[in-house]
Each structure stands twice: as structure tokens, then as C-alpha cells.
Length: 380
Image 1 (cartoon, helix red, strand yellow):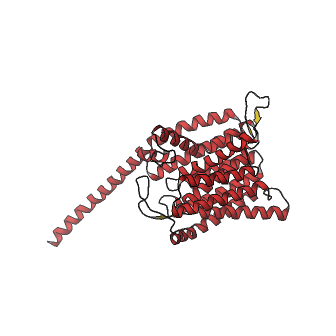
Image 2 (cartoon, helix red, strand yellow):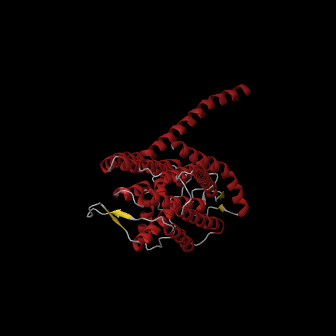
Image 3 (cartoon, one colour):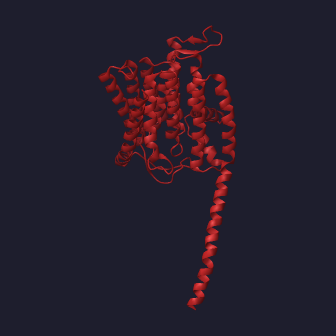
């Protein structure tokens, strides 16, 4: 079984990696180019967008391989179903509106409408949050009726969609965090024995990692809204299918941990904008990655810190699913202390490295100076 997941991952990776240069060529032809216009942008020159199409291609190819395999070999790992169809229709809507936005810039309300539409199709196809933790119940859980379940599920999917979109502010950040989250959910799916979810997460991780070499700093291409909303939407749906739909009472904590970084950044952004009297849809320069840059960290250091934090949260989710609450709490506290401390002093390492580099340059210049003088004496 693990062999099948590995093949799925590799297919998604190869297709996404190979399709990214094609997406870049297409972007310049159709005008899907990101031109920096304000101080929130970290790049200085026009860069192609819609790199997300490469990830979509990798993900879909891997799914197609598994669906065909299920039909040929009569297994139920990823057999065609109403839920799968709803998910694919939702992805098609998200990707379609993302492409248009990357070319013509659609207003936030229009994008939100189509996100709600896509999420609604997924939920009404059968993918919905059906249970929540209830410490006052004998079983520890309570079942939700559709009038509560459906709206909550739609809000969850739309929330995760925009959470990943909001952290897409530094080269390689969204793709890296999404791949880490996908791999975390993959291992949780293996622990909780949900084969179909393992296929989804393996394919999503492979497609994101296949795109990452082109997107890591300095980026050759951006994923655009096509990619960031695709990653967020798919992660939102997968987390419901695997964890929130009907697993144990701790299920709610698992996707919250895995997606903790983008969820925290989004929640913090909403409250920050409300307190300032701004619209929650109004962009600003107060996200976590911006604050790390302002602390003195380099572009790459900021991304690595976000990677480590995301990986730590994902590891806590895996431990929670496998070992229980106590182990996850101990791990979370221990790792958090070192991550916060390391991030605080990482800028000093950067400064020390820069000083050492300047000293080396000065030393080289001093070595060259006597030779120049002697050369001038010989010439005279």
C-alpha cells in the first residue's frame, strides 16, 4: 500500500516540476504577470503568475492514475464517488476563477462568492463536518444536524482557502507550508487508516514540492491565486474528509494543528484590520512573514522559520493522533520554546555572517594594495 502512495507522490512531483516552465511561458503570453506596485511586494521586477496550473496538473494526474487503478484492480482506495466528484467540481471553480484573477484582477467580493459556491458544492456532495467534541456527552462527541454542519463546513473550507492565500507573500512560503501540511495529514491518514485521504495528501504534497524549486527565493514564477486558492481549498476539503467528518473526539484538534500557522496568521490579520477600522479584505503589511522581515531576518530565513513552525505543528498533530493529548502537549511546548528563541536571535547570525564577509573583502583588498604599489614602483 505504501508503494502506491509513493507512486502517487512521484507522479504528482514529476508532472508539476515538468509543467512549471510551460506555465511560465503561458503566463507571459496571456498577460498573467505580477508587476510590483507597492511596498508589500518583495520582488522588484515582473514575474509570471499562474504557476499554480502546474500544481493542479500534477495533482489531477496523480488522482487520475489512482482512479483508473481502482477501476482496473477493483479496489476502493480512490474509487469514483459523489464526494470525489463534488471535490473535483469545486477545484475546477476555484482554479477557473483563480486564472481569471491572475490575468484581470477580480474584486474580493466576487472571489468570495465563487469560493462559497465551490465550498457549497463540496459540502452538499457529502463532505461535511458531522461531529464535534462534547465533554458533557458520554461518548465525548456530538453529532451536528445539517443546518449547523453545512454552514460550518463551508466556512471552514473558505477560511482555509483564504488562509493559504494570505501567507503567499514570500517566495516559496505557501508552497512549502502547504506541502508540510499535506505530508502531516498524510501520516495522520496512515495512522487513522483512511486510504483515500492518504492518496489526496500524497498527491498534493508531490505537486507542491514539484513546483517549489521554481518558486523558492529568488522565485522564477509565482503560483498566483490559481495556486494559493487551489492549495487552500484542497487542504480544507481534505481535512474534513479525513479528520473532521467522523473520527474521534480529538479530530478537531488535528487539522487545526496542521493548518495552525496559516489559521493564526489569518485570524490575527482579521482582528488587526478590524481594530484599525479597516475592511478585513483590505491588504496590509502586517502578516507574520512581514514581521519576520522587519525583525531583521532575511527573505530565506523568514521562510525557513515559517517552515519549521509549520513542521512542528504538523508533528504535534501526528503525535496527537498516535500517542494522545499529553505527548502532543509536551512536544508542542518544548519545540515552541526553541523555535521562538531561535527566530529571535537568527537575525544576529545574519549580521555576524555579513560582518565576516565584509572583513574578508577588506582583507582581500589589503592584500591587493601592496602588489599594486610595487607594480607602480617597478613601472617608474
